[in-house]
Amino acid sequence: MLAWLSENWLNAVLIAVLLLIVGLIVFGMIRNRKAGKRPCGCDCAACGACKKCCAVKPARNGKSNEK
Image (cartoon, rainbow, N blue to C red; front, side):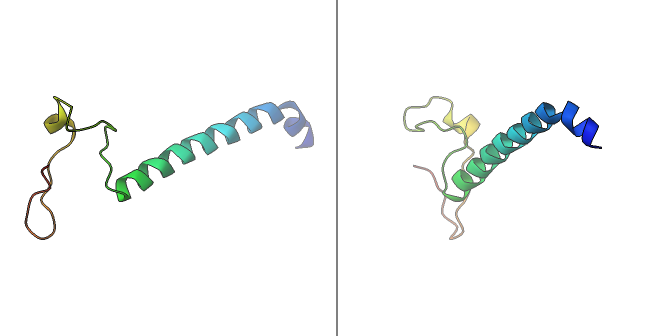
């Protein structure tokens, strides 16, 4: 086991770093979603394709969230 680990330590480190990066990206996406930010990250007031990338969802009180 130690021989395999000593031969492949670099691969293990790279995999751990990649998993950390992917985890941080997913965490950021979840945090932005909970904060109510648009998924495209654009300024929807100036975006011509906003209706395609950001679907208007009705609010919980029955009114729409359109700006």
